[in-house]
Image (tube, rainbow, N blue to C red; front, side):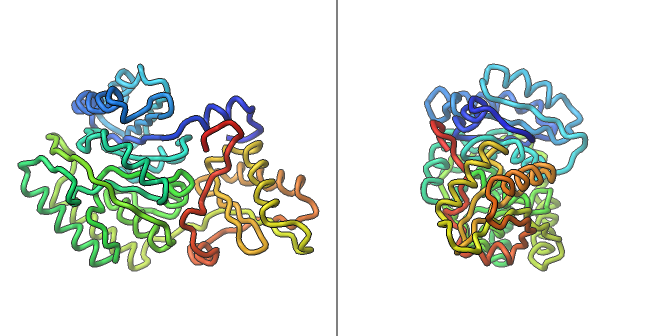
Length: 356
């Protein structure tokens, strides 16, 4: 999305606290039950529809997933249903939702709502002091209702193998109930190339390597019949993806960025940060960028941002910040690490009067 935006447009965007992404593949028979659980959470005050958007991403379904979703989501004030042209995988579907998310925080959860959405406030509260908050069925306070022993056993075995292979030391990497600060989730999904079920393991591994803070929250999970996951086949496939990533066999794209520096030393870093944030608000959707102060420079990270939008911002910064040095960068993972600890620093610009 290019070009200048009006204050009213930004106020609407920034008023959204939470974007919830629901990836869906051939979920037409289960969407209604899932939405009933979601509506119960709304009725109980766990989800505020005035400040929440719901994004259903139809991952190339061959049934009526999209049409059913549009009907079910019609009463929700902030919603969107997007259909991908072909089945690309859960990770790809969530990534699509991440590019559209307008909330201060972004979460994703499964279409069957097997994790009770009543736990949404726990995710949001976890982001007060952390970059990621993830549901965990293995915590003492969690509840698990299932008679499907094989799936539970495979889940525990997979998590143990993943913990051994990645050093994550998390209780439950595969719980489909995760939330992030929006600039953080954009950065992580830019870096991760896994499109199938193992994507969230790589998300967590990348977050750890970048020094981001992760907290686990208890959830209530119950088995919902009709899942498209095949415990044995998909676990083997997921492990293969995890270790391909761990061994560096999956290319990590650099993150487009713009650096602003005052070589003369006349401008304070704080002043540069504020001016850069103002230009982000008037030039781009601020939620698509993160501003990081580093020594005597300011770095604007632009993950999942279209090249033409990066060029628009670059031109605006050059014109407005002269004689400061403005340069375009391609930040590798090592370059991101060179910025120092990123935990808590990946913050989007806010709009006066908004909530960001």
